[in-house]
Image (cartoon, rainbow, N blue to C red; front, side, top):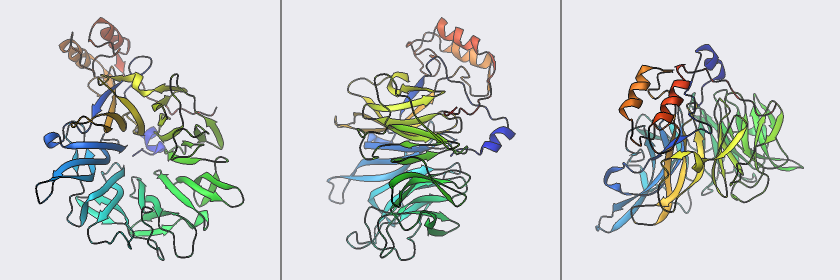
Amino acid sequence: MKKLAGALIAIGFTTAVYAGDPPRFVYVDLSAAFPDGTIRASIANSINEAGIVTGGAMSLTRSDSGDPAYAYFAFKAAPGQAMVNISTQPELDPLGSEGKDINDQGVVVGQAVYTNIDLATDSMPPVMWAHGAVVSLGLPKGAIPAIGQAFAYAVNDHNQIVGVNAPASGEPGTRSFLWENGQMRLLDELGDVFSRAWDINNLGHVVGRAVDPGVGARPYLLRDGVVTFLADTGWALGINDLDQVVGTGGNFDDDNSGGGAFVWENGALQPLPTAPGTNFVKAKDINDFGDIVGWGSLGAVFASQGVSYNLIDLIQPVPKGSFRLARARGINDKGQIVGEAFGFNADGYLVFIAYRLDPVTPDISGDGVVDGLDLARLIIAWGSDDPYIDLDGDGVVNTADLTDLLLHWGPVPERKPYFWTK
């Protein structure tokens, strides 16, 4: 999760500078190292500051009779390690769990199916995975069964969790909830109306979509008990610790809907620029430096310092065959991005594949300074196609990369937050 803005200033927080212009990223297939290569489809939803990713994956298993069977499970994937199934608890059904968000303590929230519920009559509660256990967050008082409406979407570093739940008896539509200290409450500040809570920052500020009586459904920011509607229509999908909010002016369920991606800050709303060769319909997440990720009908999009890019144009190496970066769903303060690509699985079918993108930087060692250690690593890789050291993305480590490294010699400059509305 994102760090508090005050802490960023207090510790002089720096992060690696993107290499080249435009920036470049190394593409990592998160399912490739799963044991026995049994992952058949996967998506990545969120990444914390340690680079640990959560999402959902479908794996090929065997039934008691020995016939092929599938399980859909919530996972964690740490840098350099294989994807791990975190929903193996005996009380969970293997057919349905997904991690939606992860905080810096490694707590995951999302959705799961319990083995002892009757899907025809019972609600599926939102859940939290912490310290190897799964915890049902329960349902608000008076909640009635409403299959598919109980989700935990986001968790901050204080273990405050937001999402949507079944409506209380006699109330219209889905309601936003806040869970903290073992207690769940509906966000009554929004009124007895349809609402969805999508994200929460470390200040406890919540964003989502809610009905504004007499106006219609609109993106909202709930801050210190005060509700602010950000636009005439659309969804607020992400918020950082500077209270910069991103979302879409269109329909979240339709990548072709109008409205476009937006960023809101300090009372001003601004549409995000569209990258050449793509569109920017949904802005899903924003880090504390103002870097934004999302997607449109033509694929994943990244926006930084006032410029939007088609993400597939920035990755190395690009997988061969029918492939595209479908969506970018999360970004941390180090600039690592997660989402799902569209490519071939082990069975030869086109499916979603969970990925992580790592920024390519002249600070190869990641120690905050470009120095002799980085130079030594570049020389060792000379002539290779190491994507982390190929700073210009031309497929070979050579003189151009050496020049780029030397131009950045010295301490990595401190990054400052970028403000989209001037």
